[in-house]
Length: 184
Image (cartoon, rainbow, N blue to C red):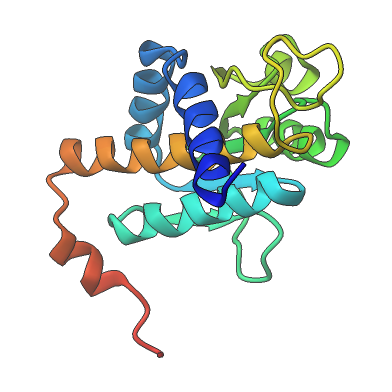
């Protein structure tokens, strides 16, 4: 296989997964984002990186967003929303973060590959991404390393939600450019 064949394989896998995402689950999450005073994101490992990218884009479109674990992240509370990204839905640290947010009165949502997982069970809302987290016994086998397809789809789904929020809020590229870092 050539490089372009591998690229097409990755793109085709992502497209196939995202076609199965439930539109109403996404719309409900976007309603929650718009209703929140502030949006906090969390995740471990590569899922955490994807959620950090989502928080940055939320800030770019004018929403107050924070990444759990950063030194400047304030306390979560009533009126806030925590969105966790977890392929397995079983990561203990992410589960603890969702539970802590709930105790402090925040609403919670998870974007996960496993809607029957412990994190999904304690979240107010679930967006299911139909991507395997492991190769073995996956409902949809992937040619990519374990977890990769979920993480790619998590980023792509979050970017799609940013486009949807931009439309809902009337946010333009100009608005985003004014909020983009100017330190370079």
